[in-house]
Length: 401
Image (cartoon, rainbow, N blue to C red):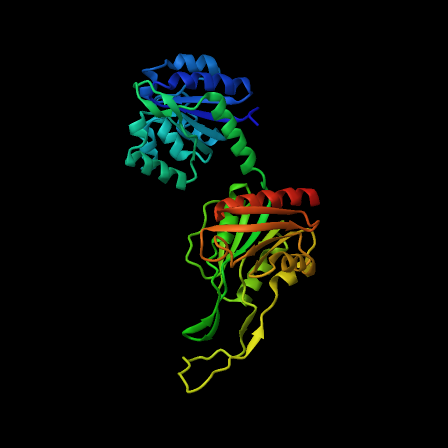
């Protein structure tokens, strides 16, 4: 993956700069075009001339030295870079990035680039654990910066602990694996439904279920992290839109979800219907609040449209995945749903089981494909379950293709 790749290597001022020399050399040997940008502090440890010799490219340090009048150097480099690596990354530079400060060549470039940024911290063990540093790293992680955690061991300051810059080969392999994973579903359009629906009875009452949308939102995020363009059709939930290339469509009723799904179905490669859609809705919806009356009350219900069945009946090249939330004999009902609705795969879980189902952060599921090949995914966070499901969907999607 490195051959011909434009790599910006940002080197900041710490004793671990010497490892950045080795990183430059190894990346260059792998065929990458390495552009080194150093902070003033970094030049106190290693001369720019060293990096120039290893990368065979001019090294940039000063924002205000513009050698080519036809270009603005920091913007030109920001646009050129396909991957940016900061190694070593000091607490100072991490803090500047977290607060949008561009007061040197490197931070200015990083504010302007659209490349994926990988940060490899290196600092004193207590500095690394400081709440301000932790908060800054978390903020950057939330903005989709990727961290390569430091190793533990003897540090230059004499302490033993976490804070040592990872080895160059580990940095290279970590980025390679991440790039391969994030490109797994590149150029694929994935439609995900999530959450419950609400079916009104009157202006203050409605029928719904216990779905919170966490599983569906986790699937949308995992798909986006794997490179997909995601349409997320969400019922009424209290969740923020996940990070990544995700377009969110909010709906309330089963009818609205049906319409939204069909709006995008024809252009989707993979459809994951994780929403818990109401099977019935009140036959009559009252314009005013119903008053309490003596005795019992009967609400007549109409059947809603079966979204998943309609998708299965009309399926062409799409890879269609359903969910079966059951409370008894889940595998039997799941297999029946898989064949009856013409699905390519189904995710089955027993919502009555501890640690699974609605309203919790974990799940326990069985993934079953149309060849009846099953994978049991033991209890884990829904985000982790979602990643495993996406990997299995990709496996079967590729096999079908």
